[in-house]
Length: 125
Image (cartoon, helix red, strand yellow):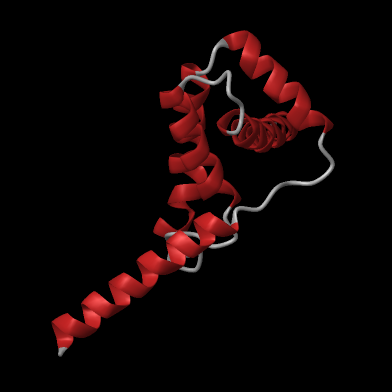
C-alpha cells in the first residue's frame, strides 16, 4: 500500500518537473497565447530559479511554494495553453537532457530579499 503511494508521488513529481520545462518552452513559443505565455514564463522562472522566495529552512512555509504554489501555477498555466500545443511542449521537455535554470528569476528574488531587508532596516532604524 505504502509502496503504491510512493510510486504515484514519484510519478506525479516527475510529471510536474516535465511540465515546468514544457512551460519554459511554451513561454518562448510564438504560438502560445499571450496570457498563457506570461503565466507560463512566471511559473517556469520561479520553479527553475536556484533561489526560493521562501527559503526551505523556514519550517512549513519553506516547502509551501514547492508543494502548493508551484503545482497550482503549473495547473493554471497548462489550462491556458491549447491541448495539442501543450502535448508538443511536453514531448520536447521529455526529450531534453538537462533542466534549464532561470538566473533572471534568481536575480528578481534576490532583489525582493534586498528590498525586504532594506525595509526592515528602515523600520528598525
